[in-house]
Image (tube, rainbow, N blue to C red; front, side, top):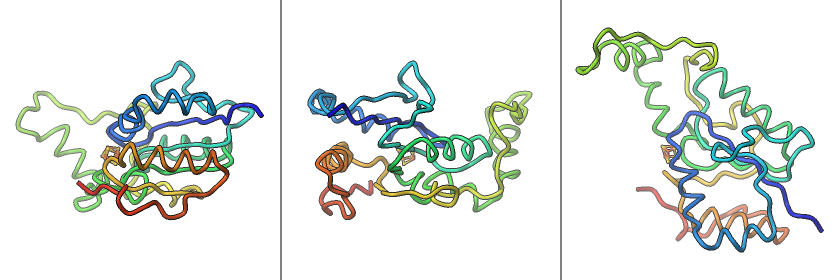
Length: 181
Ligand code: SF4
């Protein structure tokens, strides 16, 4: 049997969940005997291959239209989608923007902060259009497994991937693997 293909990507997040994935440390060597990471923000290939992958992993919240496009492409190209981290699960820290509204948050961050000089709100098409409400990934695409935490522990991520490789769906992770700090 060939290697299981995995693709990862990030949406509106801080990259901390991907850092936790790398924190699997030397166990990643054992993992790589069974899986191939085809694309990720830290590899040359940035988008999941057109022929698809078995497992897709998304970090980060849905905050703008670009995030929606990335999430939909990952969903279309993977058989099993995992949302990792609080941001991907329910919006997390990014969703605190919802408390004040998008325009007020952008204005405060880019125009009114104490260190801003000649500020401007970024509006490049590459960034997508900010949404009025930040959400988790499942508000846009179907998610097969959530691994909450900020970030989820490397042990939780390794456990979930190991279970999938063993042909089991890790519906409920062992409670000791959850981290809420
Ligand atoms: S869940 Fe935490 S670590 Fe992961 S992207 Fe969001 S803020 Fe960063």
